[in-house]
Image 1 (cartoon, rainbow, N blue to C red):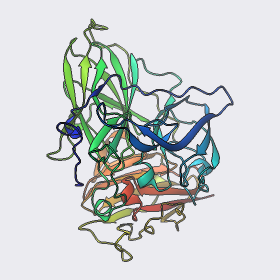
Image 2 (spheres, one colour):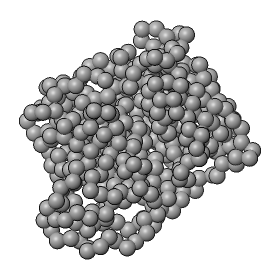
Image 3 (cartoon, one colour):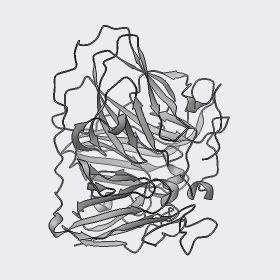
Image 4 (spheres, rainbow, N blue to C red):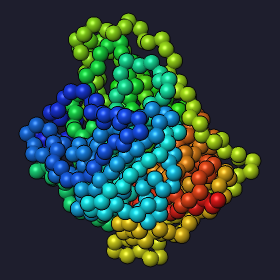
Length: 470
């Protein structure tokens, strides 16, 4: 684990924060039909650590951490006029969205980089409702860690009935005692281990001691893990959340396994939570993923108002399925992907002091290929319209959230056991020595990225290209 930098009287990871209030993120104004939303990336200073600490120098979309919440409706066309005011090139990847290949935001693969001072116009239809997000795909380990993240919400045409729709975009920061971003980006210790795990966790860009709720209300809580490397396992103490979507895709409503909502980097979950506490009560939300490092993320604090209702809302919570093509397993082609490398693993033959340290099927992407050099020979080639079945086999001692661009996939099995729920994902989390079998239909021709979403792993070898031929 990286060193921890205490920032408060105890430590921000104890949950002792000074900023209270609603966890709602300011939403971007909706563009008129046919008009574009303007979005820019550039340097900014924001207060991450709370009262009594100086602002932190970050990179941000529209000067906010996280960037503006982009909201559309299913069936709309998203139009985003992007301007790059950073001191280096960048792009935007629309994580989890089914977009045309030219809009996927991967430099040297699906588009050219947007240079410093440059502009790019993104436009794509919104096929699926759900909770998605956006971030750079250039120098990702640095740019995301500097704050370039934002939520992208596509509302259902007929949404479920809830009292509030809340977003928690979870960020993880490695800060100094002066609340500045710590250096050491891409350090081999991070790259060969668990990645750049920080010491300060934020909800919507701030450390939040409490989130106000009202007795009797029903909340739809959209969770996004936008961290470089941290895995979360959230325990909503005193409450019974039900999972209704994973990675933006509807799933049969169910309680999270062992009562904890586990999210690897890049993953999302939509929950429905009935606030069944009493006025004035407080309940902790605890992240206990890492042994001996559990901490209070925040606290649900009930107002003194009378309950909104005396019994839980009597309304269905199941979401309508998105129009995803069903895999044809009987006629599928198959190629498995073996994950290897890292500390205590088999290092790639071309590994040096700065990488690459990780490999997929024995092939390591060139070290430090993130600055606009994602063009790689394909690891997998499949025909358009063909069903692909792949087993990810993690032969390392570390966690890897494997993300596929372009195509949501069905999780068929984990460690040889059929998936408990009919689960669609775009990022599947594998623990040490675990396997996961997935299937998807290759809808659109082009070159698409496949990579670990621990960004330090991605940038030191654990990424590849899936080629879909016409």
